[in-house]
Image (cartoon, rainbow, N blue to C red):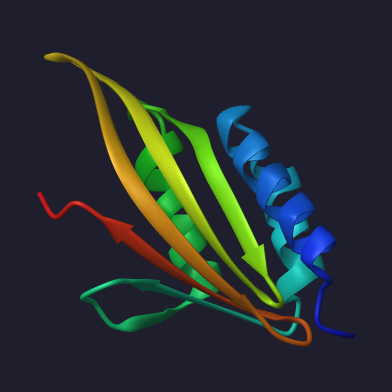
Length: 124
């Protein structure tokens, strides 16, 4: 497997966010497997590097699980340079206190069948 092209990276990221918003877990995970079948790591900046597949499962359950608020992701900007990408996003959530919008920045680095994702979110 080769390092994905910038076009493939952009397409993957758009697919990932689209599947997240449509509550399409199987399709989102399949898209991730296509680019990171040999290894996925996740890092919430300020925390340890995590094994990506359990981290992705936990993230899905936390935000899409029964009775949980669904976070809809608005893409503000996707920048792709070589094998790296930066995404500026707005996360929209409905809460009992009303809607909340919080920004996030996600940084991705792709290798030959691997992906490392770094998530910058406000600490609450």
